[in-house]
Length: 79
Image (cartoon, rainbow, N blue to C red; front, top):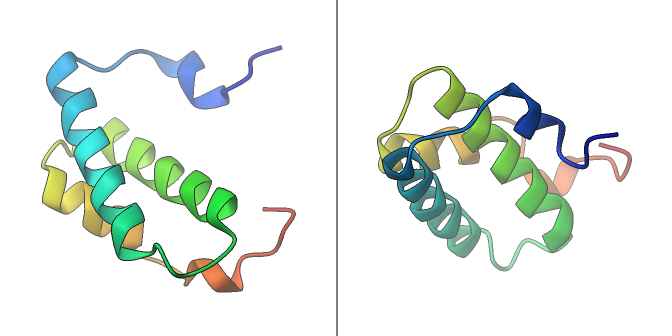
C-alpha cells in the first residue's frame, strides 16, 4: 500500500520540487487563518502536484493553481 498515491506516478526534478515547495509555502501563508489547516495543506499540495504533472513549473502559477477552485473552508472533512 502506498502512503501517498501521487508518489506512484513518478518523480520531479530538483528544480520542479523547489518551485512546488515555494508555491506551497506561499499558498499556505495566504490561507494561514482559514482553519482546518491539515485539510487545507493537503488540498493545496494536491493541486500543486496536479498542475506540476501537467507541466506547470512556474511557482507563481503553481501557487495560483493551488488557490484556485472552491474555498478550502467549504471542503467536507471526508475530502
